[in-house]
Length: 407
Image 1 (cartoon, rainbow, N blue to C red):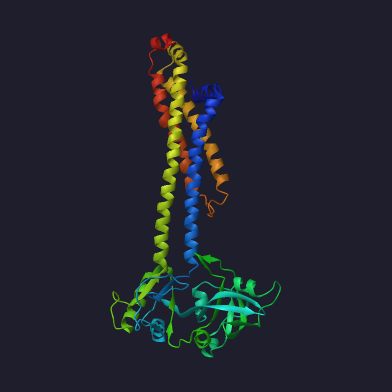
Image 2: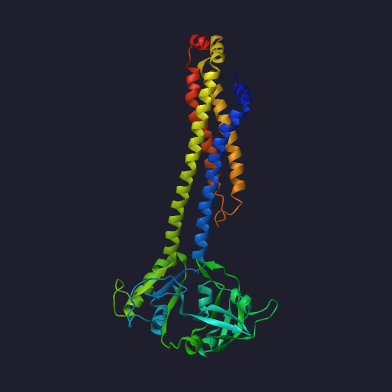
């Protein structure tokens, strides 16, 4: 008997009780679709976290005073009067001979102000910095002009506004370029509009006003010599750890201390990304393992049904063995039927999994991992073989005389 005959008999066996066969394949279907969907959710969540971290800047290191709370990462602790970020620190980090892996360093002053334009008001985050900040923090000017080094040197009261500030202050169709807005009690001119950037965690990156730090010092904070944080851009993501080491060494030398006692916190974007990826991978594996339990339960269902099938067809087995059917033929007959049920459930499960992964789940857009499809489908077939072997072997091992006497 060839494999086509075994397949034909397996199909006939499955058709003999359609409802039972459908319920058996349903168990496998649920397991396979659960694996694909949950792994897709884990992968989608990982991609979302990575995108949020990337939104913090390109190849960046953030240096902030301990105890700082602002747009950057918040770190608790006590800040001494001497622990201040100054222009001397900026100049030291900008020195190519001391920090050859640093692309740029942007001093940052962060504050929050009420922005007003012709009666419309909104509260926005105001960032005082230099032109290099836009590149380091991945901002793009969509309309108008950008800030220049001359603006910083001349303490120009020019600003770039984000999309949220634009929509809150200006009516649709109004050109904001060249218009004057109030930040607190000071007047600034809009010279450019930033492209949409989205959110980073709970921070709306579009609810921002960016101005030369010198103008922010003069008009808003009154701070003339220190900065909220420094945003350092490395030349390459591959050497970001080396860049962080150079920054720490320079700051320690400037403050006459050691790296271990540095009164600042250095946040390495590469470290954040690596930690997030590790955590997300663990989550994805956990979700996949939970879904695999469903597939295991489906396999147990296949074994249970095949045992019932063997019991129901005991006399048929006895007759076939009495007329000369060898053990391997009986084994193949029932094994084919078990694998067929698993195969059908696996194929349907892949289809359901792909459809289910198209919908957002708890705010996460699932991303189907190709390996999860191959893995889930392959495991479904393996489940049919593994859980179908025992019932098939039991049927093949029956003695003809015992099978013929079975009632």
